[in-house]
Length: 222
Image (cartoon, rainbow, N blue to C red; front, side, top):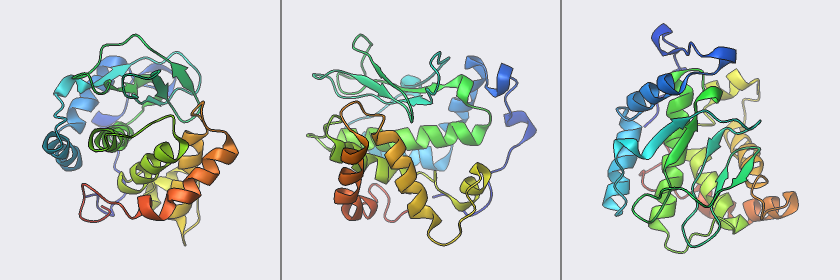
């Protein structure tokens, strides 16, 4: 669903927050814009078809106090709940849940600067929510399960679009997509307190082919 054009940065979509981040109010406004984008609408429709309809308030903006806390992911009830980021894991067990299944997606406003970043977080996390919804036995403490969802989110969300990689300073052309997905999977899975670096790598390699080629709910990778 995502085109090949470079991410644009309209003046109205740039944060005015302090230290490069945006305010919670600005982030909430950008989340609402994200909800109107074709890919987010498509993912929400498919979550509803899978029995996990979400409302506009399912995705929230907060100010994140911890260093490295980029975005938060919910784990199913009945186990310890963790919010995961690329470099930070916070155990959390006392939060309102969504229909007794999954906690809301939370976007760290102070780590967002432009609309495209907010869009990407929302899309990436909705793919995780879709995986969490469709798989009754998905266990986020299982390194292979976690790696599989990270592979799918990295591949299908547009996180590793060539032009986004250029903006991050990665200049490789041939094979950049899979290399980017692998790098980002490792960063996320090694943040899981249940997964050592070696376990994360083994898990990623074990599930790579199946999960990279699983494009649901899309017919093919966008």
